[in-house]
Length: 469
Ligand code: AMP
Ligand code: SF4
Image 1 (spheres, protein in one colour):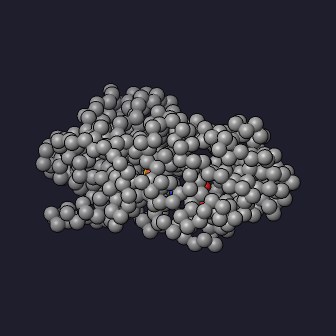
Image 2: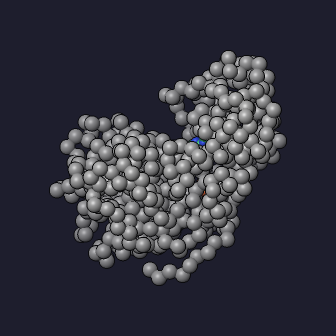
Image 3: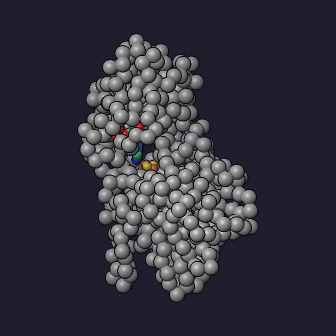
C-alpha cells in the first residue's frame, strides 16, 4: 500500500513582511495541481500556526479563514482530488510538535516505500493518525531533528530513508527549507520576490508575484530560504540517475511555467511539430481539445501549414471528468464540458490534437459529437505515447486495466474511439521535444521502465553512487 497520491502543488515564502497574502496568491496560481484542499502554515510569536480546509483556495483559504493569520515565513499546499483519499484529515501542511519545536511539511509526490517505512516506524512506537505518506515523512524528520538538533542533517537522514517521489517545502520553527528527491521526479524552483525569496512547484507563481526566477532546486538538494537569500546544504545530489517526469511538460504544468530549464509551452508546441512530421494528415483544419491540447495543436498547425481553429467551446465551470468513478457519468460529463462550434466543423476534414489518451473516454465522446455536428472526417493526434503502465510517483494513473492502450493496438483504439486516423508521438519524438537526454527522464507510464525499485515492476538501468550519510 502506498499512501494517498499527491499530484499536488507546494509553496514556501520568507520575506520582510506578512507572507500570508503572497502564499494564498501563489496557491491560486498553482490551483490546477490540486483542487481538493488547500492549506497554509506560518511561523509567528505563537509558533507554527496552520489553516487548512477542503475546497478550492478561495474557499478553503478565504479572507475570513485567514483572518488573524500572520507571519513573515510560511508554506502552503494544494491537494489533488482522487477518489478514496479525500478528507480534511489528509489536507496539508502536516505539523508535528516535539522537544525541538514544530515541523510543518507540504509535500508533492508519493513515497514508494511507504508500506515498509510505516511498519518499521509503528514497531518503534511512532503514532500515526492517517494513512498519509506525508504524515509519516513529517514524523521521521521530527525524530531526526530531535536526535541531531541540526535541521539540515536531519533532512539528509530523512531523505536517505524516503524513496521517491517528493518535492517538499518545510518549516522547522522559524526556518524554511525545500527538498527534492534525488531523481527530480517532481518540480520545485526558487524565485526572488520583493523583500524576500520563495520556493514553488511552478515558476508561473513567481511571475504572478512579480518576482524573478532564480533557479530550480536540484534533484537531491536541500535548500534553505531566508528573506535575504538561498543557502544550499547539498544533500543527496548526484546519487541517482535523474528522472524528470515527462508528464509535467506534456500535461500537468501550466504552459507559462519553466520546469527544469524547459518552458512547458515551448515543449508542447514542439510536440505538435514533431507529431506533424511523424503523422502528417491531409485535412482542412487543426483544432485542439481545449485546454490540454492547445499548444500541441498550435505546433502541429505551424509545422504543417494547415490553419488552426477553435472547434470546441469549453465550459470552464464544468465538473472534472477524469476522476468520476463511473464510465457513463464520465461520458455524460464530457458533453456537459464541451460543445462543438458548428461553423468550424461542419463539412470539414478535422484533425484534433490532445495531450494524452488514458481510458479513451474523452476522445470517443468528442469524436461522436463532432460527427453529429457535421464533420466530414475526424483525425486524432496525441502528444504522448500510449499510456500503458501505472504511475507510482504521485500522478493519478494507478491501475493497468484503466489504460485503453494496455489491451488494444493503435488500430483497435482508432476503431474504438471512432477516428478516421490516429497517431501518437513516438517516445523518441517526445524526448526530442523535451530537449533533455532520454536517460534523464521518467517515461515509466509509457515504457514501463521505472527509475526506482517498485516491487513487481521492471527497473531501468541506473547508476547509484555510493554515498555516506
Ligand atoms: P481519458 O478520457 O481517460 O482518455 O483521459 C484523457 C484526458 O484526461 C486527457 O485529455 C488529459 O488531458 C486528461 N488526463 C490525463 N492524465 C490525467 C490525470 N492523471 N489526471 C487528470 N487528467 C488527466
Ligand atoms: Fe511522470 Fe509517468 Fe513517471 Fe509518473 S510514471 S512520474 S506520470 S513520467
